[in-house]
Image 1: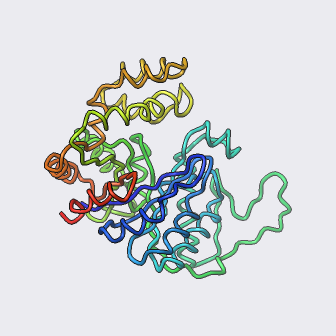
Image 2: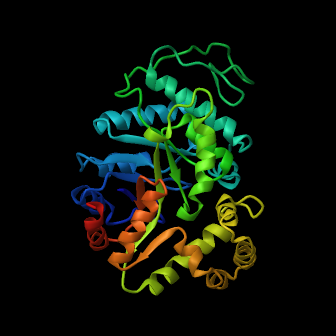
Length: 345
């Protein structure tokens, strides 16, 4: 079991201790450091800035938004960071949801699976640099020949030679069709709100993708990285209660009420009635009440919280379920140091 440090995306400003966390993570033996983006800070810049203080850890995006950049612009950022880091970049991509895609990026959300397939295909063309990049897809056309086109577009190769044609592309995916697509076209799965008790269901989704003609990977060389709160503590009650308001936001308030992918994940876990109640309370402004109705087990299904012996035993459960890396968020260097002995297991 490997560990990745999840820096996430910024709130009102940059986290003051992120730089020292990144250095401490490398020293502690973490395999990777990840940054995210939504509608504030971007993911590439923090990795380039804080990652410049490291020499070994991989630098991943978890995730960058497809709609934030054209496929070729994302490929440019990825190949640039890969060069600067000496081949340590992992490109993690995600489609987000309609509120962000259409409200912030001003792009249509429709057909996310089709968009993802075409997007990844174009990036792979750029990284391979075998021929000028072209795409005649329904979502992305290179050269562009749609409304407003001059007709003067020319297929181009990247000026800069990518360091690695096989730079790993991981996809953030939550639903069955998206996970199957991930297994088919990507090098790894960034799993959010993963629970080991549903590993059999996830395996069915993944196996569908691995079995498709032309699948890029097999289970043997495909990476599964799951976001997970891993907290060593003698006061599990306090930590569970601290997480509940955040979960109330993601389950009850993140995305449109009629299309919240995070809520759908917990429905699949069997928490449909609880999701309905959390959503009703949160969207009526009763956020504290929404957090209060979250069952402890809902938190513990996707987190590891307890004393060191409990955490060690649960890590084995997650590893047996097929997870190769845990993406953990830590508040400070002291908490990271508490995790360090587990990294060496």
